[in-house]
Length: 255
Image 1 (cartoon, rainbow, N blue to C red):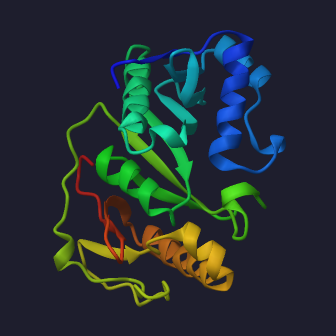
Image 2 (cartoon, rainbow, N blue to C red):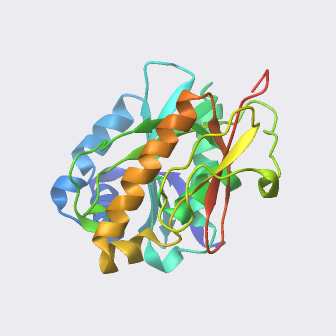
Image 3 (cartoon, rainbow, N blue to C red):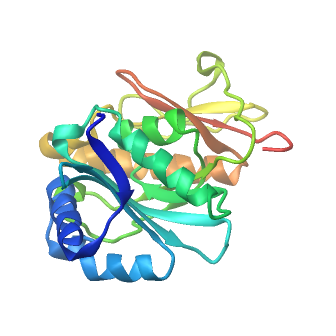
């Protein structure tokens, strides 16, 4: 890892490598990527286009967009080359983004991600400590590559790194609001401080072997997320395992 250089990208050649990395990570077509000319324009207006370089080769990418709020950046994408997965590079890229934002008076980073992808959920919610209380139905419309086959629903993760750490509930004591086998919604209990919401352990595998089941998970969990958010819950943690699940809790004062 010591050979890696994390910095803002420069010039058209690194912009082309950023395009290539997106296609490698997500598949699909050139219509599905953030093109190099748009990346250059984004940098010009104050956005973040940074990467991890291994001997001049772009192996990681993080892109952040300005928002209507001066203290919030929208993180549009984070990509890590397959050769570097499991190395901690995603964490380093997010920390670079956090430090870049903090130096410019930005205290919160928001981004969307597929709520059924367990690895992303664990990274975003458990490791980074982001929260979520907004669910977007079919946000991008029909997509290709690894996202093909089900509606492009997204959770909005909000990472506020200027406040104190968030409290975490004991997940073993929380009731479930959907079935761990297929996500079928269950009744939302009254008066609980927190609940569990299950997702599939491997969405990619499910998409390849049982598309109807993957679609059922999408529609079932969509219903459960909307019901929980409407009742005042927010996503505050994620637990991995054979039956992974989100922890949703009611915010206490100050959270």
